[in-house]
Image 1 (cartoon, rainbow, N blue to C red):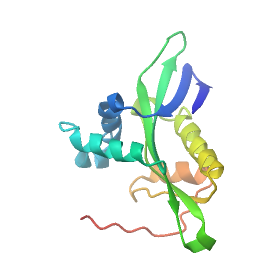
Image 2 (cartoon, rainbow, N blue to C red; image 1 turned 90 degrees about the vertical axis):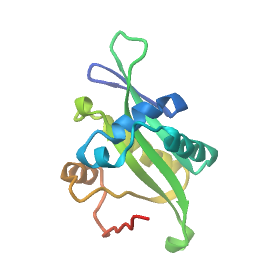
Image 3 (tube, rainbow, N blue to C red; image 1 turned 45 degrees about the vertical axis):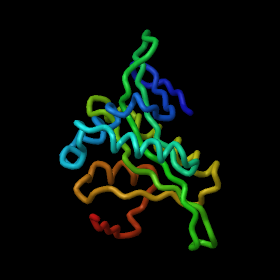
Length: 163
């Protein structure tokens, strides 16, 4: 998917595999919001979600590995989900939605998130999408600045209803 040299090593994006689930959930839980939502003691719901994502070509679950200089492999340090959605508005345009974007705390600020989101933007264009969308919690002001630097605009007010 992507291999890029970064400070101190190489960053590689690849499709997620079932063995990655514990590390993915750890990344999702690695902040105050995620810590309250994720349940690391039961991987079964995550496994079912991964199976559904893998079964549908309109959804990708991606992980990133950081391989330190001189090493053959390295730990999983990043993840995101990318979905491709058909729509009626915008003249029947396809859009992509990126979510669950996470980079391990110790590697934030090294450009890994930038590499991931730019790859997702390129993949969305390659698949014919005319718009990429995302939601980010109102309290994640650092994430807002990050996405704005990449060209995203806070053009809509999102709403959610827990079911």
